[in-house]
Length: 94
Image 1 (tube, helix red, strand yellow):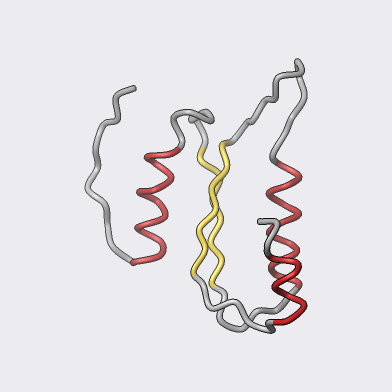
Image 2 (cartoon, rainbow, N blue to C red):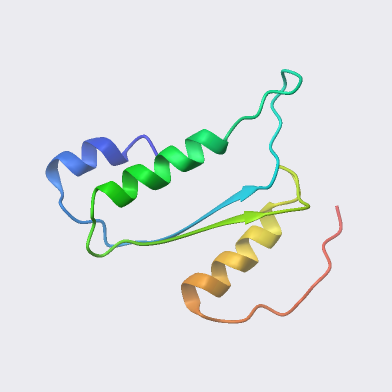
């Protein structure tokens, strides 16, 4: 979300509903290095600190998934949160 800091300079509000997901344990290519977690926290804190009146921010950690398998369950959880609609349970095959 590199476009957010410049936007904050000229726009005091962000009328969006945002749903962010992260897997429970994200490992980078370097053995044992955890990645993404701090970026996720930093972005969340930065957005909250802006006090955007119209921003609705949802975040969720999805355990038991990896970078490749989190997309579909993430979309389902996002749809449920943003649109307040229940997505029918389904099995994903990869």
